[in-house]
Length: 223
Image 1 (cartoon, rainbow, N blue to C red):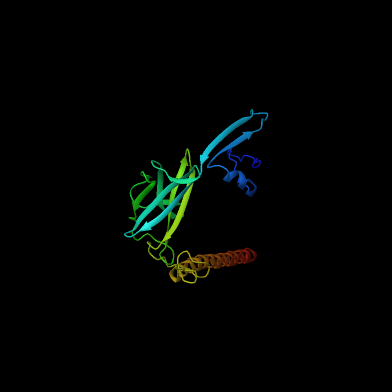
Image 2: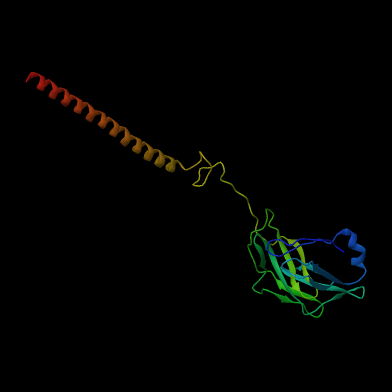
């Protein structure tokens, strides 16, 4: 028994293998995981199994920006090369892995290895120009998901620059371009100038109206 979990809103449940299961894990090169869901008012009890073979990926580089990866599996206590398994070799990026060249997947040969040429020249790396190469096997029926990484200096150096204290269009408050501030202040000044002008004109109209009313009243008194 590894533990009990509850599915989320999309029906997935994740359980980490606890350290207490280490002895059972190392007993055999093959393991079978069993998942059992309890019966509910909506669903009957269900059961699923997943058999896996212990395996690992190895990755290395060679001169000329060549990437070598190898798949080995534990068979009868010996790590043995595995052929005819598809894997991906890419560069780790923010939104996923970018393949090292135009080939999306590679297939292991008789010695369990694949070779790929790195063709992503001038790809931005970290501040030292380092990139992270990733070899991965995804959803294999026997070996599941395997991933291994290596750091190489094959990228271009990334220099972080900031415009936080400079006047730019999207800068923080008080650091917008001068021309934009002048334009905004000019518009505000023009609007308020029109409003003030209208207020003065209304006052003049009121004074004129009062003046004519007073003259008409005086004229009526004379007559």
